[in-house]
Structures are given as C-alpha cells and as structure tokens.
Image (cartoon, rainbow, N blue to C red):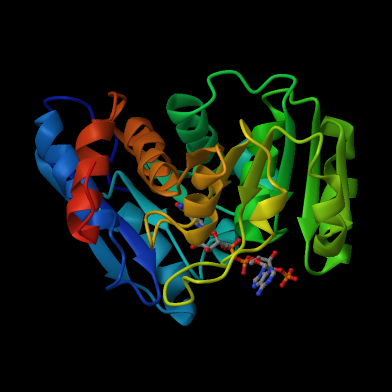
Length: 289
Ligand code: NAP
C-alpha cells in the first residue's frame, strides 16, 4: 500500500476531483491557485470517472498515492461503499464530497454544509444561535446545509419544498437535533413574517433561467438576510430584488470556496487561502470582488 500521508517537506501532493462529467468543474483551477499561494508543490487534477469504474478509481487513490480527492456528481452517495471510514458529517448527510487518504486508509467527509455555514457566518451573520431560518428546497444541498445549520443552535428551521413530503421527511429525520419542521412551498409565503434568514437551495434562478425566483420577493421585509446557493449568476434575481427591498444578501460563491477550503485544510493541515480561491473563481466567471 502506498504511503500517502502528506506533510510539509514530504514532496509533491497529489489531489483531484472525480466526477462524470468533470470538464466543467472549477475545482482544479481553484485548488491549483491555492496550492501555489500556500507554497505547496503538487497538483490537483480533474478525474473523469464513470459510475462503472468508481470502485477501481477509489482503489487507485491508494495505488497512485493521492493524498485526497473531491467527489462530485454523480458519485457522492455511491462512493461511500468503497471507503474505510465515514466521518459523522458524511453519515448525517448521506453523501461524501471529500476523501482523505492516510497511509491507505480512506476517510469520507462532507464539507458542503459546513462550507456553506462558514461562508454565511464569515460574510453576513457571525452568530446563528437563536436565528429563525427558512430553507427553500429539500434536495441534496438542502440536506447538507440543514445538518450544518442545526449545529449552530438556531431557534427554528422551516424547510419549504415544492414536494412537501420531502421537506417533511427531512424534518422528521432530524427533529431530534433541533426545532425543525417541513412544509410545502405554497405555505411558505404565509410564514415569512417571523423569519430572520431565508436560504434558497433550489436551482430556481440559475443560468440560463435567470428571470425566475422561488418565492415572491415583495413579501420580504427590510433587514431579513436572503441567501442563495446559486453562484452562476453571481447575483440571482432573488438576491437583486431582495437587496432593493432593504434585505442583506449572500450568494453561493462562498459555499463553493469554503467547501474546498475545508477539504484543502484536511489534506494539508494548513489554513486555506480563501481570498485567493474566491478571486480565482471570480476571474473565471468574469465577476469582480
Ligand atoms: P437537487 O438534489 O436536485 O434538489 C433540487 C431542489 O430544488 C429540490 O428541492 C426541488 O424540489 C427544487 N426545485 C427544482 N426545481 C424547482 C422549481 N421549478 N420550483 C420549485 N422547486 C424546485 O439539487 P441540489 O444538489 O440540492 O442543488 C440545488 C442547487 O444548489 C443548485 O442550484 C446547485 O447549483 C446549488 N448548489 C450550490 C453549491 C455551491 O457550492 N454554491 C453546492 C451544491 C449545490 P422537488 O423536491 O419538489 O423536486
């Protein structure tokens, strides 16, 4: 078995991201810039892995001496079966986006939810304890961020989804971790009054359907925090109109940066250069800081 624990002075670090397709992923460019800024020699490469080859590809992490990889669509759930250890974050969410190789022992983590919460706390609201939160959507991204939000001891979380049953299932599963309820998206608009933070985790408003919003923004009140996981476009219509109404806004770019930052920190044991990572993606998207 290859020795693959990386430490400063131990030579080049090998990292990558597995997905199908993978050419569109911006992780390689972001992590390559980060490694350079950290002065760590090595490479972060895109790895095109089809579902039928996933087991072999995971074994190759050990064989080739990769220190770690990110895992993206469609492998986040299926990859769990091939790992030696699953961190609590991965078990709770039921998906892995980061693998760490320690002398051939592969551990799966999920940094999506904690990445989102680190972004929200760094950029808009440092303390979420006591906050009344509404999460719109109940898909994979909503699962990750809801699990991480519950750790912050909010006063309540309402999950509102087009398919109400999925929101109710998610809430029932995590009711032992906090005050969480599931409702339909139709009910959401009548419950906005007492809400401090609204988070869109649906794909509504994403390129190329940029004129759509998941809820009626005219019902939002001044001072509310409106967050959107979408980062293409960098500012969705939901965020633009919310800002015009006097709300504080938060886009999805930070989630992408911080999920990667956590992974890099697990692999290297060193703080990730998050500002450089953010600027690298902004440059790619043609935006400004
Ligand atoms: P997913 O598992 O497919 O879930 C999609 C969710 O959106 C479901 O709750 C679905 O409701 C809802 N939805 C879809 N179309 C809708 C519509 N027209 N009206 C109302 N609700 C609708 O997807 P996901 O992986 O959670 O990703 C969701 C979004 O998060 C995507 O835009 C993705 O780009 C973004 N994201 C961002 C980051 C980041 O780093 N910033 C990371 C992950 C994901 P139903 O259950 O009723 O179908």
